[in-house]
Length: 276
Ligand SMILES: Nc1ncnc2c1ncn2[C@@H]1O[C@H](COP(=O)(O)OP(=O)(O)O)[C@@H](O)[C@H]1O
Ligand SMILES: [Mg+2]
Image (tube, rainbow, N blue to C red; front, top):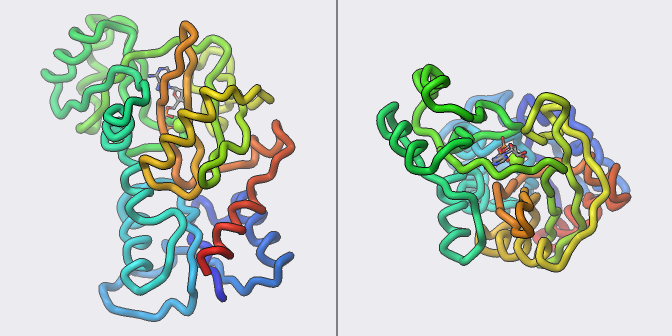
């Protein structure tokens, strides 16, 4: 069996990629790091010389998604699958699926114009969060506290966008790491001073937290509904209720390991071995 670790220019040198490579070497599994950004993606049937691929690109955006689809069309089994990465990467589609499955999410609308954004915010009531439908690392996300004063923000959005009710999280939010049907553990991420986004990439810090059965239940159900083999599920607690914010289908795990002592890399490579 030969494994392809699928990266882009951003994830090529990440700690997670190095950990995966270390684990593959430890197990004497043949592998190749494939940076999809280094070549054109041709529509031509080809043999990649690998049996299984571990998708470790930085987001579910164009080029990355098409590269993953191409691998599957060429007969490579990809973890997570194209379908799961696509579903999970689109915040509107994933939250819709999860809402229909009975998982609590913040009130959310998708908007495509200045006028409909004003309507959505007026209906929801501030504060709201505006976020790209497909995005990551907290980029492009803004909070609106006072619509009249912040109207100009709406002019600069790259529509379509999501309007979402802001859920206060003074003590941070949760990131649950799920492998197959098991929640491995959870961290609490706390936003830096003068910031409300808790993304580690935006300066958030991670802390040990207790995995309640409810957190585990929501996270596992979400990953089953989206169809991931492993995932990082973002959840905010407010007034003793959990709200699922996002499911990450190519999640980082450095801070998770640092705060919990659990390194998911072994179980991720197990998934790859099982698929091969
Ligand atoms: N509805 C919300 N209420 C409060 N905080 C939010 C909300 N949505 C996002 N955030 C904060 O912003 C961060 C990034 O949002 P998220 O939807 O996870 O997008 P990304 O894919 O960029 O990580 C979250 O981790 C959370 O701290
Ligand atoms: Mg997130």
